[in-house]
Length: 231
Image (cartoon, rainbow, N blue to C red; front, side, top):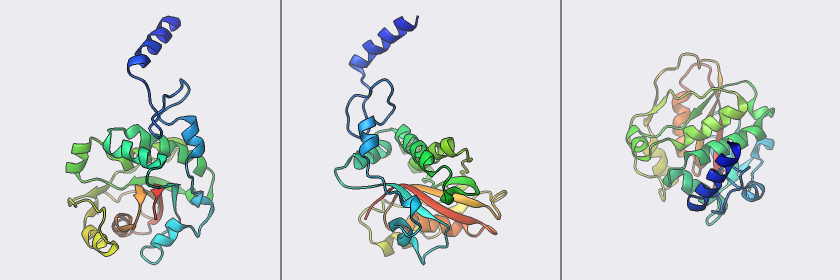
């Protein structure tokens, strides 16, 4: 029976090949979502080993946080850009999950994730999430949760629709994000340390707005992690 299934799988793969989300090459049977070559060559930041990293400096003086870090650098024309395009525009939430799972394994046992009570994804507006079919940051959070064994909390809610922030200045992004987020239920988050996660950190305006709302919860401490960091 296993032999029949294997032949059927091979026949199916001729017409519907499993492709790497980073480079587009065929995946081998032991590979999932991202090929071994891409995994090896991704531009990892290792920010979690450096408290004084570029992502943290982006947010210094704007919000109080314990740690801030990102998994990989984002460059135009790179494998990371391909991955981000796949997960945001090509209905590939499994890319975000895989990256979260990989990053969670790197973070496991390190100081930045000490005493974390929950992982909180930056939410999409319900209309945008309905159109896309999923929230990529939530899938990143789920991947992290899988590796770190820390629950995902989705009580941070986006109640105002905003246009894309691309090509807007830092000030305009900040003004656009005021009063966009609310916490539906703060029960259980008081005096806790949580990890706020998003797909990309650029100006940090969205993360700042989310953090400001979460920090209204008594005694809450925040660390921040994203899939990618761009200059």
